[in-house]
Amino acid sequence: MSKGFIAIITLMLITLAAGIANARSYDGDHSKMKSRAMTSSGSSVTCLSWDARALLNRIRSKFGNVQIVSTCRPGARIAGTRNVSRHSYGKAIDFRVPGRKAEVVRWLIANHRTGGVMTYRDMDHIHVDIGPHFVALNRPSGRT
Image 1 (cartoon, helix red, strand yellow):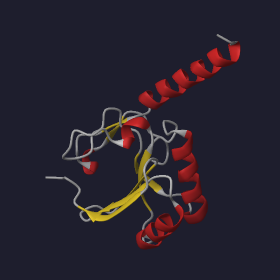
Image 2: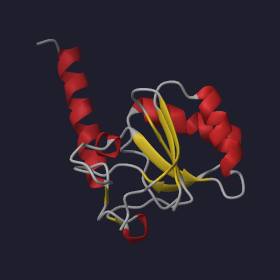
Image 3: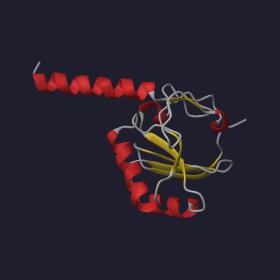
């Protein structure tokens, strides 16, 4: 193997380890999230994939410093299913922009084509992710 290839693999492993160390635990209820390692914004973004960070930077450049609700949650599942959440891969962000939710959602629908946009009827945050394009508004959260 070339030295460049080994360096890339090493960097990927270091990034993965940092993401796991900075991950948030999740027990199925956003109000009960517990952070193992938090930044001043309340949630780490160092665990996010480069494309999720780029999306967050686009959102921040348009709407200012958003309130992060959740980023990486290793082992996270989509509520009510056995499907692995994009949060477990560092490819999803839950966030708030107080007083501007509708404006942000409209902008995301018009400008975010490399993943999903979702809102929940009983929660005030916005979910965005990297992956197949979809829009799901006012969805049930799966909370009991």
